[in-house]
Length: 149
Image 1 (tube, rainbow, N blue to C red):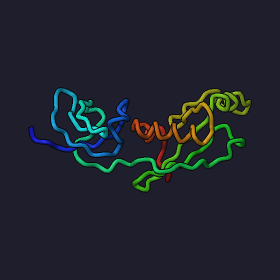
Image 2 (cartoon, rainbow, N blue to C red):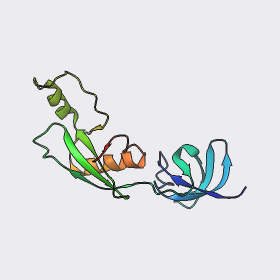
Image 3 (cartoon, rainbow, N blue to C red):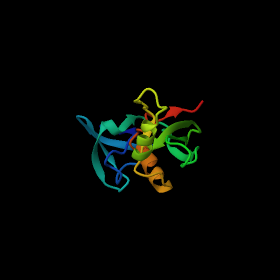
Image 4 (cartoon, rainbow, N blue to C red):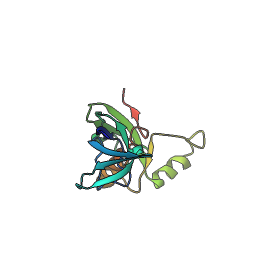
């Protein structure tokens, strides 16, 4: 079999072996798996689900900015910036802040569906950073955000 390249779009449970956006050489292919050399220097079989064929520039989160004051709003806007200079935005909150939002007598209708809402345990910088990076590494951050226009 001749080798070819694939680009990682999600690391799944393979954080020790994969880096999102990195191109890997495929040495073998069986069923739904590729055999690549992981970042740890060992050859591993990994599902094709985590890759796209060829060399691609995958937008990776480079920075984020909280656009609202934590104590002023229940749903806080966050601006996300990616390696391709694109910007997106999402909302973050905590379970307590979400409860406060829903208990507000002015809220109508009495329920919400916000696909770009991320619910966090806390709103401290480290937790936000870890959560956004996790979603980015799992290729879920684009789905959890909207383009900033």
